[in-house]
Length: 428
Image 1 (cartoon, helix red, strand yellow):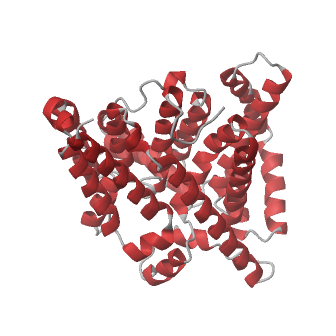
Image 2 (cartoon, rainbow, N blue to C red):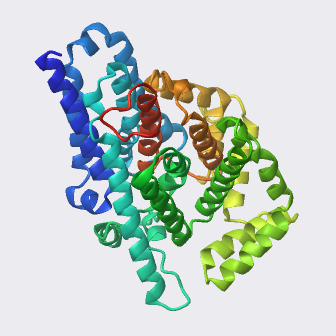
Image 3 (cartoon, rainbow, N blue to C red):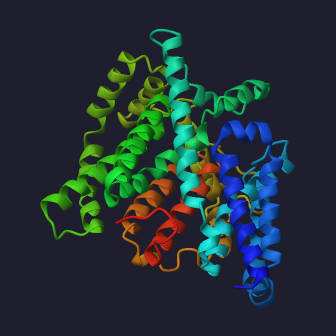
């Protein structure tokens, strides 16, 4: 490898290491500010520019990726009304949001081990540290006022005005917020896979991390996070049990067998939700009990409460039905609920506009999953992706930069371990 290529690989590696450390450790992020994220992107850009092959031989492939990365955030601003009065800040945030997708696609093209050096290990280490500190502060909040959970992580998901000083204080304690909690939810299938495919102390470590992630999700009191975590764990545990009983059963087939169980849970949703409400009341989880009561009212045939999430879903859905093909692309008078990424995208851009947006994402990340079919981790990633799409129907993700980081690096890890296990976290 030439010195120029070597320096390029080192810079690209440094950019992702800096990005992970800055984003996954809130205490670091609040002290080093957003300029650190911008610095990570700048280092990556320099690494790409000094790589003679990328722009010299592959510029027709790389420049469309950069173009889509620059344009897609503006579609969210113009047609989904994201960013509010801070469009410039939102635009910069969105560039950082999609950076892991571009980085993983570029790293896959290079197929150079030095680009991935320490990346996966640092992601796990940073996630473990923030998980531990978040649990500690959430438990401290629980003990502060007997009978009441003081959910710091919910405060970090609050974008209300005049709260920045308080949010900075919480981040200074290294408490993971909305994005980190949901990134942990989507990481559960991967952590489960690592626990099952590793041996010795590594297996114990991953089992401990899995237990800590579940504890943190429960303490954070995000209703959807707990529901999705529960479904993911039911599917994974049932799949594991079936593989133990039927030795020749594949991982994909065993996980597919969980579909009837999920269907049965849906059929029993009323008594199950009623029991969960009673449990939430007993534990004084007021936020959870309130959300579950709203859900129970609708599932039981009741009306949609004005101002609730369900009312927001209805707003986006009705707006989509008014113009299903192009949404508000031309009149820009779409009514959005702002609580469902998927419904808002359909309402704001219609089926055609949403398809164009997804095509742009495909252009940015094209090729990053090449070879993933050889990875034994693929069935677990499918669960992760299904959970993401399902969550986008009931929640928002575009402000949570931790989510694409975890999802993209999960794919990168699966691809890399499928072809070469040296130098990174190894699985048996």
